[in-house]
Image (tube, rainbow, N blue to C red; front, side, top):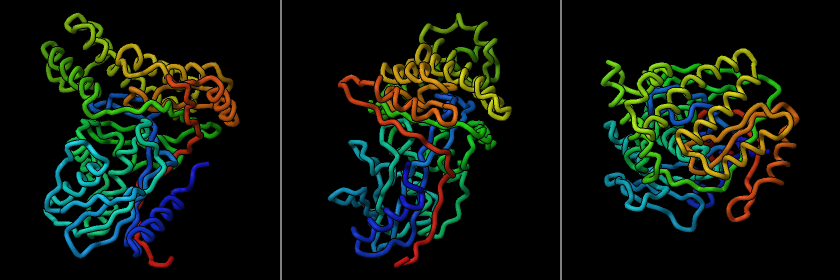
Length: 394
């Protein structure tokens, strides 16, 4: 069982005291996420269906009497920056996520006070569970509270997305930051990534969610992720010559794409095919959850994975093996890769009481390229980011 959010926050506070020799003033935490369905649709103004999970990053902060931002993630050495000179690092370091958030908060016109920052959490890095968004949101909530700012949650999510664009170099959509900020326990979120209208959709009782980390690490910045975005944009530019008024693949129906597919080269056509059909799958999946039709939901999960493998080409042999092993297991509704791909994690939705059998099958049948085992665990669906003042000695 994963540690509770409260225990993660307490560990961050305790580690801060040990490292900096005083109590922090604020502790904030934000969860990782799984995307149940709707992959690579967010930056195409489409629909997604993520859920926050019970793995989180906590950030404990205390004010300093200078302009330094001093940060530590449990390492021997601090990273220290002047708040007057915050820039992306040349080597794309973990600190970019924090300095990016601080820089953009200051860009709103209010200087921040100097701060000591201690980071602690259990969202695996590079596993497709959005450890970056969890770190960004926890940092933002902590610095906002420490400095007495009033920023609405949706605006905070947007600011964190911008930080990832400008400081981490990843042109991500809004989904990760949005669900980490506004998730609800035992609910998925149907999010319209264009309007940011959202609905919390209850997860039916009697199911378990298994997450399987392949151990294949992804490097999104400078990878094929940004290339996929450009291929989608190319498709929109070409299709707009025949479809007046479209600004994203969100505006294209499956029927329209079928009729106009001859305009597109084979690669761009496959990218567009995935996004257009995936948007349709998300809407149908949310309806299936509302109706308690888990068999239909599971089928759509498998269809999504097949599309990501064949058309969007972001899966990998390890992810495909996990999905195949899940499909062969008893009590499984569906399985698919989650996250941007190129490694990371897959998820599996099972009937209550069948998760352990799936885990046993994955442990027996999965071997990575170097013979390593996958990390497999059952996740519960948790709330979004929270922040609180710390009482010294409490």
